[in-house]
Length: 213
Image (cartoon, rainbow, N blue to C red; front, side):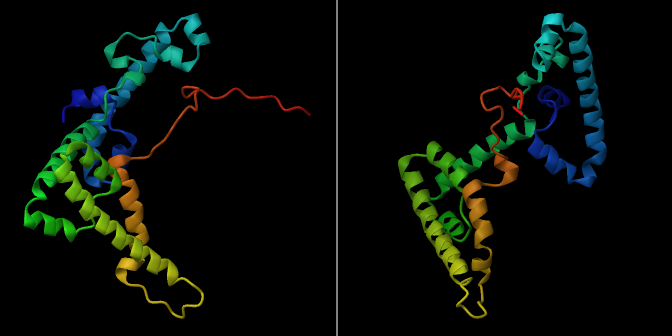
């Protein structure tokens, strides 16, 4: 992954930057790359501030950030996509295609049947990519897994009833709620948070209203 790609993306997205921060072995390489990115951010701020006109300053922070024409300091609203996310999307498509094409073989069907299966976000992507015969098989296998998970969840809930003395949970029942979270939402490292910002104000803070005494 080149420094040029990272510079165009202003580094990694929040999800992958957080993941990287948990890797002590990556400290030196991260410091080298992000030193350049921090300097890039300093130039962006310096040149944007110098180029800002009075009208731009009246327009607030967003107008000020659009004042520079230097490619290294342009508005962050035009940042490139996180390079890790770009590579993950390509790998994701390749793996989904391989899964769809391989379900016709008994070996892969058995392997999929013994796994936890696809999360629903990935199932959506697979259905959108595959032919009807391929996706029908995948959906049928996944439906069986959902029904089994629903039963584990039901047992887990039922055994919490106060009338059940000393309930004994199986491993599958005890872990069902975590599996359900991952199955419906997908992994944070892949899909990230679904954050809607701005509420129609394009991220600007809503004006304060004066309280009436």
